Structure formats: structure tokens, C-alpha cells
Image (cartoon, rainbow, N blue to C red):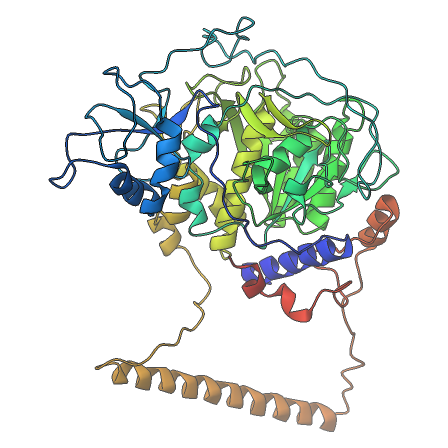
Length: 564
């Protein structure tokens, strides 16, 4: 079976599972992008006004046209900067009167030469009500200790209708929000090419709150490998919901959060329930379920020990099914188990970092492939909690998993190992030596990962390109004739093979040989019945025989339905 066929089969199984598990496909199209708040965050996008541009004084309409592709958005720029004191003591009162050296805060989706991100040079830090936690930007941390979490407020254990269960513990939240990760990664540069449509991302963590409007239509009911409910769209701890928000979150009236792969679908696999205590065997089981369900990317949260031999074996098996596995980099306090072996080329180890490059945890030196934002990250909380702000490697894992989905959607013929390679070599270097022990290949760059041309991919064997048709140009007649000749040659070869097959069949009949009855379709894998019984609902296994389940149409297993 070719790799492209394997991808089609796996993709079809994932879509069949999504339909069978009740995924609402309404609203899968990308929602309109709302501008994220800038002044509520320490880190912003901004532009330093110059004395002139193209020989004329700068003004807000020209700046909005240049960086936002719409001069009418000058009103947004005006509102972000009106009344704010500038370095020379002045303030913006007229969009046509700008002074050289002024720092203009820009909307989050501004792109172009001259756009910067970070702390405004004129920003005066606001006095904190309490001392900054160690490890937060501005907290004076020099090591890699994670900041102390904000005290968790109590929430009602009741759930929205259809959420599928109840929680008995509180979730953590924070009123302090930061948008530095979105500003730094600039996912909008990738979203003009791909949005992850057609990719099934399994999140192995605490589940995901499927009742949230920001996740509607992008989260399946999933699976629970430890409780009897069989559902994964319940989350009592909140970390899995936060990961899902970073990957497929949709902007709403109450939230500007937008996931890095907003048109993908998340399958939450719950391996912890009301307590953050996890068993390695449950992590291995969750990976097996994700692989069986046809996930194209698996994101392993902080409860999974990727160095455990049983988990490592499940990851290796997932790699044989061409699945990209994203796991958190091991911490230095975790002992190395030689029996776990080395990670496969389809696995990528991720470390979390802050805006100034500090680690989210004490990672083992040399065990990081890439890094992604993992400190002071704002995402979705569970129902009744609101937005959360936290630190952890799982956030970095979510960003990398979303980037992998973007690549897989745009380049469906790349293998999982090639996807990992593309993530690595397009990352922004953070040191002279690449890869190095602290940051691996560097900080991920979603825009580069989907646009950069890699010569090594062109040299590798690729399936034949799909034919494209266009109006013939002057001098295109020769190409057309060659194309017609190739079609004729192919038809002739097929005719010869058909005649030879008929002649061989005739000789076998004369010799009295009976080829026997048609063996029929390959019998289903016994594991299907096991997982169906274990989870309490049907599970479509990649490669299993039989017709598609539920409402899946025969053409939904083709590559075309999974292209962005």
C-alpha cells in the first residue's frame, strides 16, 4: 500500500469516527477574525513613525493600508493610540498629524517591514498588586522554574446540556492575560495558505470541554480511557481544554482567541479525571486509541511520560501508521530508561519558553527538538471559569501540534517524518549552533513552515501530481500533443495487460484449475470490537474492512476532502 493510500485510508477513518461520534460539522469554516486587545497585554505589535514614507509624511490611513491592507482600519489604529503619551510628550489627536519617533500600537494581525513586537519603549510597567511569580516575564527569573499558579476559584459542578458528565473539582483561571505568543508566532502568515482543514488532532490529557462556544463544531466526543463514561469532551482540570483552545479555538463576542489551526478537528482523549494522577499504562492506551481512530497528529499533554517504555512502544506503533506525535521534552529530574529506546523520526519533543527565552521547566539538556510559547499563555478555561493564563509544556505541545496540522493539510503527501523535519528546519534559530542543547532547532515559525521550499523534499520520491487544466497558449500545442500521446500510450498498455489476463484465464480453465471463490473483503481487526466495547461507542479503525460508518460518504476518504 502506498503512503498516499495509507493517508487516505487513515483520513477517511478519522472522518468516519468524527461523524459516528457526533461531531457537529456546521461552522467548520473559519470564523471572521476579531482584533485581539493590545493595551490589555504587556506585549504588543507596534510601528515607529518615520519622517516620511515614499516621499510624503506618514498618516494613519497610509499606515493601515500598508500593514493591514485596508485604509479604513485606520480607525482601529487611532483608537489604540488616542490619548496615549508619546516619547516626545505629545499625543495622537489627528490621524494626519504624526511625529517621527512616535510608537503606534497596531492590531494583532498587522504584517510588514517595520512592524515590531514586544514591550513598547515608552511603556511604564504598572505596579503589581503582588510580587511577580518566579519565571514570569519581568519577574527577574534567571533559571527555568515555572511561575506559581494563580489561586483556583470554585466553579459549579453542573454542566451545560450535552456536555456529557459533571466535574467535582475546581479549575484554575487568571484575570491576567497576555497575547505575546500570538504576536510572536504570527499564525496569520500561515493561515493565508492553510487552516488545518481535514486534520484530526488527538489531545491526550484531561479531556476538552466540548460545551464551550469557542470549540463548537471542532471537538468530537472523544474517548475516556480511565472512567466508564466513554467520553472525552468533559474536562474537570482544564489543561486539555486550554490545549484545544490554542489549536482550534474560534473567536466569539466574549473571546478573541483564535487557534493556530482553526479548521482542524480535535479528538480529546481523557486519561485523568478529577485528579491529576495518571498511570503510564493509561497514556499508552490513549495513544493506541488515537492511532486506531485515524488521528493524523497526536498531542501528548503533561500527564504522559514519553520516556516510559510502554508509552514509547505506543508512540513507535503510531509512527508506523504515519502519525505525527508531539510530546513534551523530558525534565532533568526524570531518569533515563534505556529500554524506551530513541524517539522515531515521526516524533518531535517540545520545550516551552517565555517571551525572553526562559524555559517553562527544567528540561534535560539535549532532549529538545524545538521550542514554542509555554509561559504566561492565555487560553480557554472550562465552563464557568472564563479565560485562563498559565504556564506549562502542554501549551507548547499544542502550538506545535497545530503547526503540524497546518503542514499536513497543505502537503498531504508528506510523511510524518517529513512533517517533523519541516517543523524543525523552518524554526527560528535561538543560538549559533543548531540544533543546540537548550532550544533544539529553535522557536517554531508557522508561516515559514508552510511556505519555505525545501530542496530535500523535491529530491524525495513524490506521488504524481494531479493533472491541471488551463487554456492552451501560443506554442502550447506541442505540450498538448505530448499529453494526448501519453494518454494513448497508457491506454495501449492497459489494453495489452487486459488481453494477457484474459488469455491466462482461458488457459487456466482449459487445464481444469479452479481459482476458488472470491475471498471477499479483509476481515475486520478484532481490536475494533475491543475498543468499541471498552469505550461504549463504535470506533472506526484505520485500515479496517467494510463500508464507511454513519453518514460518511464514499468520496470522503479521498485526499481532496482533506485538502485545505
